[in-house]
Length: 166
Image (cartoon, rainbow, N blue to C red; front, side, top):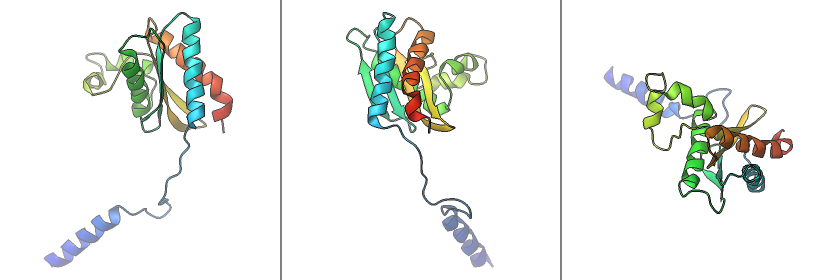
């Protein structure tokens, strides 16, 4: 009787990794082309420059892996990693970073986020979405406040919007 139970458990475990009926064995997803990611970053950088801000801009794919990093000449040494981590935070939590600031304050439901590695709870990390598909995120760091970083990121998105709406 015990051996029958073990066989049933083993069969269930072996079958756990297989797709169930209706599930695909291969997943297809959309991704930004490198040239589009670069165009996005350049447009965000140019918007910040036009406002007098020296920033770094990072674009990450849907898995949080960097695709593009641009740093203006006089942007602070912390800005490349901060921009990358803002983008990583946005894509990881599928939320623009500015929207995470309030719920992550001490005593709030997401207060523990501040203790996680690579999480940056400042404005400037914005998801890149097209028709319900998450393509990645853009992070900007170096403007005087997170709101200005976010405005530059959104200007970059506006510059490529016609290319990603599929």
